[in-house]
Length: 453
Image (tube, rainbow, N blue to C red):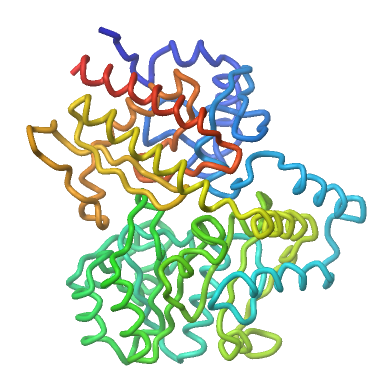
């Protein structure tokens, strides 16, 4: 039987000595050695891998090892790394300058692409990140309604703005409490946290607080507790209740925008929100976010209206060029049917491999996003894994088992998310052969996990 090394073992450090040295250096200079916690490998143990380049569907680390990439910079690289059209657009923009702090025609061009693509957006404002887009969207909803309370859902992540960093509540509509030092109780008290996929819970919240709720903020397909798919009943309840009570329905499509369909998850589900936040793909891999929606709402943003929002680097020429080229490529050569077909094959292959190993997993997938949730215990004859419908069920996952799975795939040159609670993404560059290679690697890892237990 193959023995898996602990993620903390010297083997992993000696296998990637340059990454080990780079991490030791970074820890002396940067908090935790990383510029975003998701990169720290804290959820799987061991040390993060440092990369030097990407091309197509592959990443190469600084020790020269190559990996099939199922992160895609956490979603933006739907066309793969260094797509020629995107690189050419960046080069052309760079030849003229990097930033002007003044309007450019290219900003209007990207705005036109976004408005044409996303059903709910009539006007759009560009920012520099998904966090900034969510923060600005919430402020606009509060300013437009004159109300203070917002609803978010446990397990939905909308960036690190203070009012959105609150502990998960329940369907009993408990008021949020601070989830991070530095977030005050006063800031958190205006955020109501509910369980995802619970239409009765949101109905009860509106019954109790309806005339004070400025907005319902939600991921229309969740990627931040692993992938969780909304039920039609849940989406219908959020739309009908916000309309009835004059609240803003704010979709966070930072992950799903242009990923699940050209018009995002709202096109896929046929639900039209009042406001939408975008990020990741809309910037083509460079820092760019956006928020947009009904013209009467967006016209309340300064300087057209009184709701303040500004940004020195908003609409940066390089990011606009990368985003515009990416959207043009997606529109002209729609990849969504092929991405869905390959995603279905990956889902089926992982499910079959887990079943053969006797491991209970819940596979959730929409298009080119997927999560394999490891559940406690073993499969009994005829047993079915528990569906993951929200944070209450997602949080029961066996994170130690996922860590072993992650490192087993790393050993085989496959780079999955370094957390049980992150969705994977793949690109138009991933081939059928890549998918089969990934399934074969996963089958080996899962069988080894079963043999060693």
